[in-house]
Length: 241
Image (cartoon, rainbow, N blue to C red; front, side, top):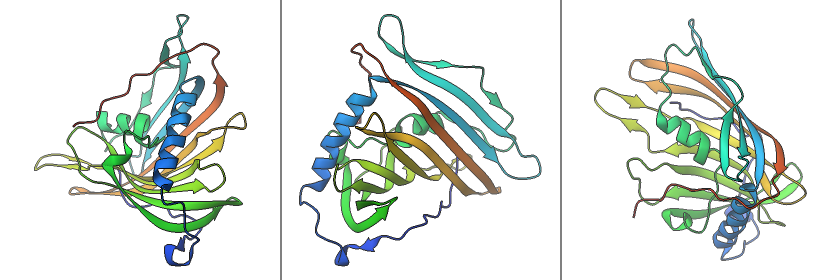
């Protein structure tokens, strides 16, 4: 789908001037993320998505869905009303919806960590919290398997990811088709005084298609987190070997 960049308001202190992080920081963060993933699987929440395109014939895509549990305790999704789509120049693809589900919320678990090159970039204050900044770059891209390429901000005290900035890869270009994706920022908030869950994803990008650029805005709001009392499980896509 999208392209260019959402500008962050604060600056990262370069690694040369930052205090040294723990040598096993990436592993500690991945373990913390695995715990957050397990905890989030026990919550219901609402997800509201708005995708807007620019231009004289501007349209938008809008949907609101609840992530809930069935009476038998199985995790499922429920649209509150049929999605509305008046986009004229953009076609939403399965990759776009996969990114909304898996990449924009971004959970870097121990199973996924070996697929990334991790570089320490420095530290930065994020809303009064002292954070480490790590850059994640995919070691190898696979057709049909979405990955994240960008920065994560980690609270030094809790080792929780509080912000991510980057985009989903790979972009898909052929002689006849282009499937472009946005740079986005996802902000997290603590839930029930514990794990940090996604609260807001935003993007405001220009997509450089061969037929001409298209301005796009993306907003995803996650709200109404409520812990479900019973045990449940989620099946995730298995990465290629």
